[in-house]
Each structure stands twice: as C-alpha cells, then as structure tokens.
Image 1 (tube, rainbow over the protein chains, first blue to last red):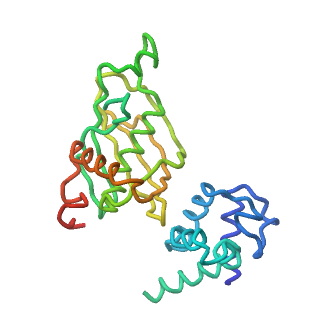
Image 2 (cartoon, chains in turn cyan, blue):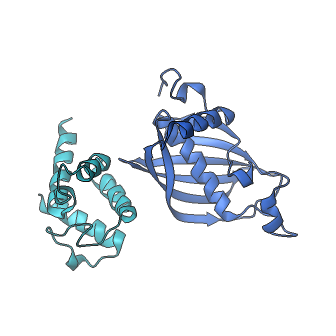
Image 3 (tube, rainbow over the protein chains, first blue to last red):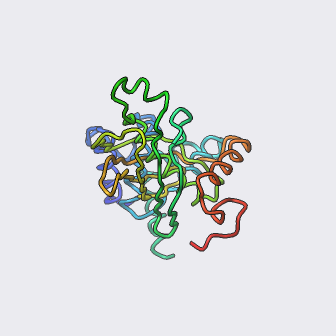
Length: 95
Length: 162
C-alpha cells in the first residue's frame, strides 16, 4: 500500500463522511470501524474513482463478500482497499 | 408529462453516448390532480418533480449505455436548485450529462431549461443494477419507444455507433 494512496483515501473519507482524520488508520474497516453505510460509500467510491482515474469494481467485490468467497476485510479494511487501488492504478498505467 | 404516473419525459431529442449526454423535452400538462393540491389557486410543478424529471432524463442515458440490461435507481440528490416556478402548459428541455459511470453506480448532473433559461438543476447519484424482473424490463423498453429513445440503443436493436 502506497502511503500517498492512504493519505488521499483517508482525506476523502474524512471529508465525505465527516469523520475526524485521526480516527482513520490503515487498519480501519470502512464499514465496521468507521460506520460508513452503503450510500456514503458511493460518495467515497466516486471521489476515489475520480482522484485515481479508475473504476473500482465495487459490484464484483460486494458479490464476492456476499457469496462468502472472501472476507469483507479484503476490500474494506483501508490497508487492503488502498492496495487494491494501487493495483488498479498500476493496471491502468500499463494498459 | 403525466405527473400522477411519474411519467416526466415526453421525448428524447438527443442521446449521445460518446458525449455522455441526453436531452429531453417535457410538456407540463394543462391539468393534473397534482396541481389541485400544489397549490389551490396557484398551480406550479413541485420542485421534487423537477428533480424527478432530471433523474428520469439521466436514467434514459444510463439505460442506453447499458443497452437496457440495467436500470438506475435514484440514490442521492445534491446541489438541487429550483430557480423559478414552472406552470401548467409550459414546455421545458432537460439536459443531463454523465459525470461518472461507476461500478454499480453512476453520477450525473442535469439542468431544466425554459426557453433557454435555467429553471432547475441537480446532481444525481444512481444505484445501477440489473432489472428486478423481466416484466419491468419489458415495460421499460415499451416506455423507451414511447419517448422515442432511438431504436439502436435498445437491447434488441442493432449495435450503436457510439
């Protein structure tokens, strides 16, 4: 996970969801720890997509979680979310 | 418009997937039960129906983008401004531009104009998901034809150019 990615994402979450920046850590789970609901997460996703020029595959991630294939931690703990963003950004750069 | 049926769009006059924009014409009816209550003696189109008009207009763009395989549902309204009254018998033009096509969601900005002047505007966030059932999709395709969505944007039409 790039530290600059985390800083950007944490700033987006803080501003979009009105959560104090100091409460947002790489280990925070966006839903379970920060209490971001699905509607607010759309705002977060929009801001992340715009900031990084990507399209996070939220539908695929949500489906995998709902089907029990993966833990929600994989996509919604910020450390993992940022790693996924880094991967998407890298894939875009090489496309 | 048929306000009591939430049919806000009368005609799609431009739908451009490359530019990610749609323009629709909407004729405010001379009479409607809505005007009997909003307001007695001073009939005006409710502001929430202006927002609905913007949302539905953008909805046609999003459905066309997805070849009517998915439907957008209103999830959020931001920066809504109603700048003037709209009254029975007027015609307005609604233009919506897609701001972002996300995964399972979309964001668009729309404007309602009367004779070229902005009457209302809003930014709309949609949840975009598969049609809940085939019957609803069939009804939506029928409605798409009624409002003159070009046939090549419909799911069973030829491939669009853009």
